[in-house]
Structures are given as C-alpha cells and as structure tokens.
Image (cartoon, rainbow, N blue to C red; front, top):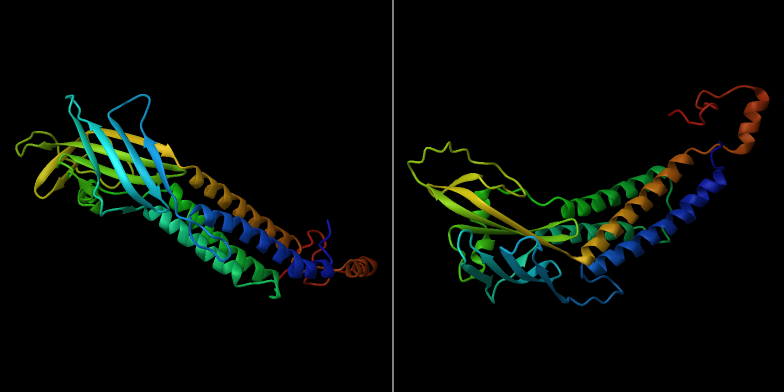
Length: 299
C-alpha cells in the first residue's frame, strides 16, 4: 500500500495526535480518581473501605482490613493457632496506619504520565513523528511501571519481614513466633501470616536459610539475633479491591492508545506524495533514498 500523502501526515501531527492525547488524559484522570488523588477539576474524597478477609476452605485466619486510598488504616486479625484451639486477636494501634508502597508508587507514575501529557497542550505543534514517538515512549514507560508495581509484589527475606515496621503496629504486640505481611497482587489485597518455631541450637536439621520471596513456604529457615527459625505454617487470605481492577483496565487501554498512535506515525513516516510516485513510475527510476518495493525511506 501507499504511505499517507504529506498533507494527511501533517494533519496527523496537528490534529489526530492531540485527539489521542486528550483521550489518554481522560482515561488517566479516571485512573487517578480511583487512586483518590486530587487532579485539577476533579474533586475526590478519600473514603474508607472495609474488606473481609477469609477463605471458605480454611478458617485459621480471618480479618477485616480498612483501606483508605494507599493506606491501611486498620487491620483486625484473628489467628487460630495450629495444634491448639487458641485464637489470637491483633489489631492496629489507633495511632498507626500502614502505607501500601505499591499503590503509592503506581499513583505517582500515573501523576508523571499526566504531567507528560499536560506539557503538550492543544496549541503545541508537533514537528516530526519522532517527537510523537518520544512522548509516547515516555508515557508508556510510566504506565508500564505503574502496572508492574501492582502486578509484582516486593520480594522480601524472612529476617526483613521479622524486623519490618509492620510488626510494631499491632496491639497486643505480635508474639515472636508470628509474622505478617500485606501486599497487592493485581487487583487483590493479600495478607500472609507465618507461624514459626525456634530450631534448638543442637538441632541435627540441615540449616539452609532461604532468600527473598513474595511468599515463603513451610520449612523455610532463617536466622535472626543468633536464633534459628523454621516456618511451620503459612496462611494466605485475600480479597478483591474493585477500584484496583479498574486501574489495571485503564492502564491497558492507555497503553493500547499509545501503541496505536505510534503505529500510525510509523506507517506514515517520511511520506511520499502520490504525484512523486507517479513521476517515479513514469521515469522508471528510483532515487537512492527510496525503495518502491517496500515504501520504506532509507536513512
């Protein structure tokens, strides 16, 4: 097929690019509303949402988490201790809340993407396709990073979990043989509870400390303050956060819009007019910078 004529390519740079930028801004403003962050012209109120954690197949761990934007403002957890009927109850201290870094980072990447788009208002005239591609690449980088923060929880070692500030947030204080972790995985808010037992100093077990992981398995070992521990039980419960699912959909839509615009620019780059092609065919010669077989301009 033929490349777009020069007039059409100029129209693409002048009109359609700004139309796509407007669509992108609209979609990302919707995403920003889900993150409950203030954006110009959009009033947002930070509401508290309660999520019930539990599983129909197990009742060792149950709880209610209160999420307000990027912060867990309350966690109420019941843990049924293995091999006994004892139920431990923990909740956040009133003066504490836990920031979910994944949500905060994803939100910041959305802000940066909106700032990039806002720096090219409708009065801005794009000069080249390369300039459009550069902007799209920068926006796509921020959107990919935002999505990756929600889809890729941090890997932590067991000593890092044991010494985390999260362990100091509960009342009554967590016992030394229980650890917890909160994280986001896609559109789910996850709670993992680890029960530990201390390995005696003269144990004949082959001690092999494990590295970092999102989720550690029973049998995992680690050392802390000259004591050796082994994970005896792992309980994971989760719940869906609907607005996180919305944001992931908005990221996908935005990335598709960016890629479609890049494809249009690439298909119409270095346009050759129909008149020029007719002349080339008439004289049966091809200038050294053109190849009619593929339509690609050689640079």
